[in-house]
Each structure stands twice: as C-alpha cells, then as structure tokens.
Length: 353
Image (cartoon, rainbow, N blue to C red; front, side):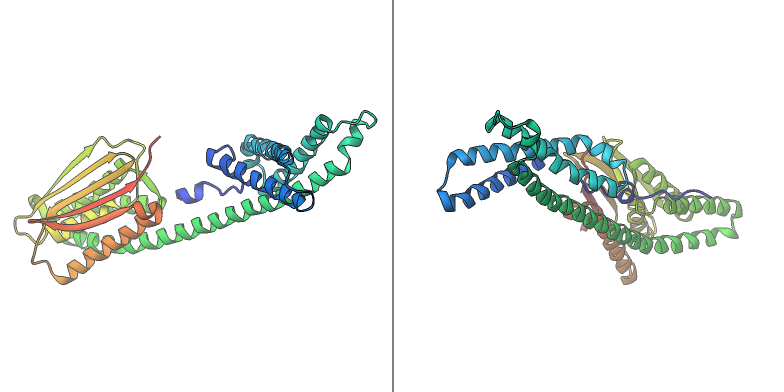
C-alpha cells in the first residue's frame, strides 16, 4: 500500500521560536528594548528628575542583554528544533535570565567595581539579582507569546489544510462522473481502449490521493491533464485540438494539484463539445516578476445550456477558493468572453530563489 504524502502545510512542523536573526525581528527587538529603557528612566525621573546619562547607561545595558540573548537563541534555533518542544521552550526561557545574570555581573564589574568586594559577591549582589528577576519575568512573557503565536499559526494551517481538502473533494466527483461516461461509451465499441482509459483514470486518482491538497511541479500537472485530454480525444476525435505554450517557467514553480484539469474540462465541455466542428484549446503558461500566470482559451458557444454555465461557474469558484486559501488575496482567477473566444486567466505569486 503506497504511503500517503503530506501536503506542504503539514511537512513544516510549527516551531515556536521565530528567526531572531531576521532584520525585521532585530529592528522590533531594538525598538522594544529602547522603549523599555525609557520606561525605567521615566519611573526614576518622577522622583529625581529626568537623567539623560541614566537613559544612555540603561539603554546600553538593556540593548546589550536583548541583542545578545536574541543572538544566542538565533544560533541555537537549529539545535532547539531537534529537541522535544517542551524541552526547547525551557532551554530558551532559561537562557534569557542566565545571559542577563552574566551581563549584569560584567556591567557591575565594569562600571561599579568595588575592590573590597569579591567577584562572586558582585554576581550575587542585589542589583544583579534584581536584573535577573526582571529578565525572568519579561523572558517568560516573551517565550509564552512566541509559543502561543506558534500554536495559533499551527491551528490556522490545520484549518487551511481541511479547507483545501474539502474544496478539492468537491472537484473530484465532477471529474469522475464525466470520465465514467466516456468509459461507458467505449466499452462496447472498443473494450481494449476502454481498459487503457480506465488505467489512465486510475493513475489520475492515485496521484490525487497521494497528494491531497499538495502543490506539484507544473510538468506533473501537465502530465495529469494530458491523461484527461487523451480520454476526451477518444470521445471527440479530431474535433478537439489542444495547443500548449510554456514560456520560460522555472522548474521550481509549483501549482496546486488538479487546478488546471477542471479548467481544461470546462474548456472542452462548454467550449469545444457544443460545436459541430469542435475547436482549439490553447494553454499558455508564463512567469514574470515572481508571479506565475496561466491562460486557457477555448471557443465560446453562445448556445450553451444554463446547466453547463452553472457548472462552469461552480468549477471556477472552487478553484478560485483553493488558490485564495493557498496564496491569499494576490491569487486571481477570472473568466471572460472576448469575441468568439472564452478566456480563463489564473495568476498567483510564487517567488523563486
């Protein structure tokens, strides 16, 4: 029995600790540390007056502790990911007060050194222990925030996966019923070909079950579409002509599985099939400035029935919802009439490194 692969949203296990080496993270860390320093000085200034020198010293110490703690957590992030999450949380939390204890002791030695006091006594003096206690409280709040945020993201990813699965399952029956009708029409006239069609259909569903909600390379999606088109060509014969044009799409670009197939099915059923002479279905794929674009052009049959039009709209809406769930608001799927042709355009951002 083949092993069912997991979709991307499950392959990347949620980790509570963000990348603190990121420029944006460092910027917010410096900003928050400076605001915290300002609050400390303002509290003291209510009694003694605002002291700019004190603000400078407090800022230096707080920034020193914050950036050094973030740097160590950043370097240890890869190792912490290999540990059980509970142990990683404890180590991350303990690192902050431990680093504060060392930094506070060194600052006391540097700025308030007393020759009559031993180094050990300095590290266990009231100012140092006060700094450690404050760091333990703030560090606990920060680590808890990171942990809760990671849990929230994991829950959203799980909901996203279920949403994609539900939308994809709504597409499969539509594809299955039409394909079974094609097979039924071939059983009596050409049973050997009907058997080949069944094999192609089983290959399509085997791929679908192995990659529920997954993104696959564009070429893999094209191969699946060709299996479907081979079935349709047996039914429509020379009435169906398909032309592909792939314009410099990087191999890294991926597409949600069974996204193109239902759009091609609409093009065949609502564009080519109603016409006695058939027509041409053109598929053009391109990639520019981090955006993948795909267009499908087929003949426009004005006498198409209302049921077909409703099915066309439903397939477009399902595919549009799947793209929005994966790529957000920048994902677009539109369909419109241009002369005697119907054009479906699909685009979504997919940055390639």
